[in-house]
Amino acid sequence: MNDEQPYAVIGGRGTMTVFEIYIKTTPERLWEAITSEEMRARYSFGVGTVSDWTEGSEYKAGVPGVIDIASGENLEVDPPRRLVQSFTALWSEDVKREGTSRVTWEIDPVGTSCRLRVTHDQLGEAANSELYGGWPMVLSGLKTLLETGEDLDTPGSLRYSGAAGS
Image (cartoon, rainbow, N blue to C red):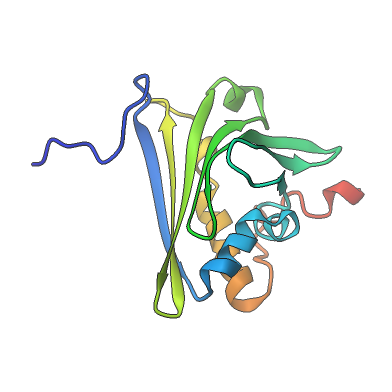
């Protein structure tokens, strides 16, 4: 077995999760879906993400007046190929105690589609599964939106949709 690690362990925080999906779309359209507050809310539990999407800028994810979900810094911004963000979960005291982790979005064109790889790393050894457990639903919603123009309608994917108007 190869002893090389495929990622860096920073401060003993070496746990990671990787999700990879293929979406029939262009890299530009996929980038737009990741960085557009309105599109993001359609596939991410009704939660929009606001930023100016420049390297070193801040982002905030939430439903204004209802709940703060996450915040962090855009560490690397290379449209439409790569976005690296620090990630601090804010939705409960339990996840706040987990501290900051990192999320990397990598987009690779494959024929008339794209491969999207989302790596959530720098998680603690016994990280709360709430930090990464929602990724499959978020990414399924993203794929559904881009390929059909429709919203995924599972209960979790609709969790905060319409909440700001309640």
